[in-house]
Length: 438
Image 1: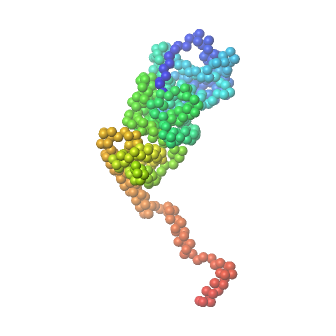
Image 2: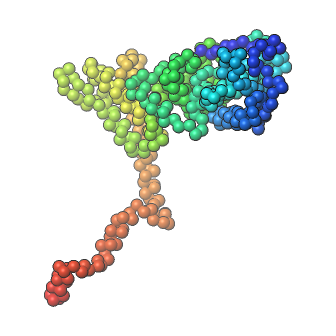
Image 3: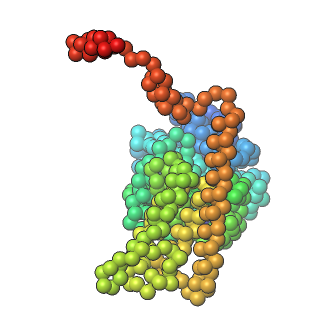
């Protein structure tokens, strides 16, 4: 998405009188608990609901950024009802201006029966982000262009708000992963949500959530995202380069790989059910053992280490694309110890599938495969040591029984206990024969 530049203007008296709702003077007002939001117009119930919504929207953002509330510029929220003499009045308009001594933020909202809470939150969040961006830039000359927060940031925060069910987003992303039609990251960061139709907006929101989660999961992600927001007024026109500069560990190298993995992770409806280390290793082994048909129709099993052999077969790219997709889905539920391995073999299989193994890549392949194998051995050895220790501890140190063998012990105990005698005619007859024989 291209960073939108708008012009800072001083709102004169003639504008105030010409536009309905542009001024909040002489209207009843309410102030939010943090005193950042000053709501004018409507009745007290509507103003109270707006104060609550604004505070919750800000609290969600601060929670994501792990930041404290240190606002400097208040936000005026001016509420108006539709007027017959202004039928084309916009539903929402954000005014950002320089008063000479401070900044002024005013959000004008039209209160109608069709007003949607999520759309109001979107406008509130945009204004709150704008205050964050220009909090320490109060000496801006009139007429200086200002930068609007990117759409993916606004929609990503909204999608990750507390209490929201993300299953619909997961299903949308899963469709894109299965069809291998994930939007390039460069296209998403330049995308304008207002230019999309309704289905495309839903997909844009899901992608925005995936991107924001990717950035938050980066090392010191919350701190870097806060700095990214503060630096937006000075951001270059290249939005992708700006992201890479602020998140070098994640997007500085192979940004496409990390982006695809993030989408795959959020696409898994059961992503919260993490596999054990043993289950992850077992699935990884099954995926990395694949069959490729030869020209004569015969099939042979290969692994990634056999790339020099199967690269000569015409069908290898189609098979490796399926392997890459399976690895992508596995990464969503892989045990944390195996995630870096799954990501590495996914990147290798994807390079082979796309035919991007140049001379330099071919020279690096043996070393990369050897590192994967070495890391797997380390993980498996550590896992065995952990299992051995837990078994030893349970056998020698625990003061209470774990219950793991309770069924076996109960069966043995019941076998030693005399069984009650049956009183049916046949059993009585057999008992009498036994007595007589003794």
